[in-house]
Length: 256
Image 1 (spheres, helix red, strand yellow):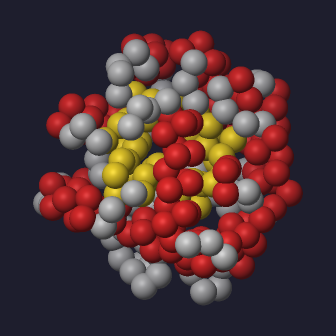
Image 2 (cartoon, helix red, strand yellow):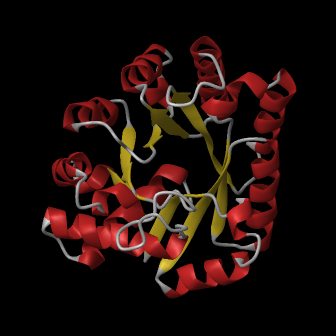
């Protein structure tokens, strides 16, 4: 019983075999998954998928890399979609200082607008952070994001940052990097974060876990992430899968 809290099976990388990939995930024990839309095209595809599969839910938001492209009507559209019974989160949103498409001030403005929208519609948020940890955490605090809480998606910070985020009502979600042999920080975080605040994800088609690193990721591989975290925490795979799934159902207010 696994819950992949962050997939992009709406991405073009799955256009040739999407149905087969979803079926393979179910066979691997993936009970539920969230498909994340982060611009016009991917949000539309996410909404199509939630209508087609009863075990797929959507998060809708605007990616920081594309913040410069977001218009007021896009935010209004996201607000409209938030009332759909299968839209369970706003995001992914946040800051990305790795790519330079959108100026930092515009990213911050779009981030703040989406946090405020999430508070208005009372949905949790999914946070994207790349090379912008301190600014992300500061904005979450300033906007009182703990009112809705959410997920630090594909968490890349240290244990101290993880604790700050947990104190703000956020869950720590780990993906493929926790399985990489040379990635020490995610392993330390996996050991330190209480199981009650952990989630698992793939972020497919990106960040495939070992031994598929460098290849297309897919939801079935979330099992490898869960197995590695269970090993690091010294608990059974079954317990880790159950607890992280329970956490996700609770966060997203999904009835099993």
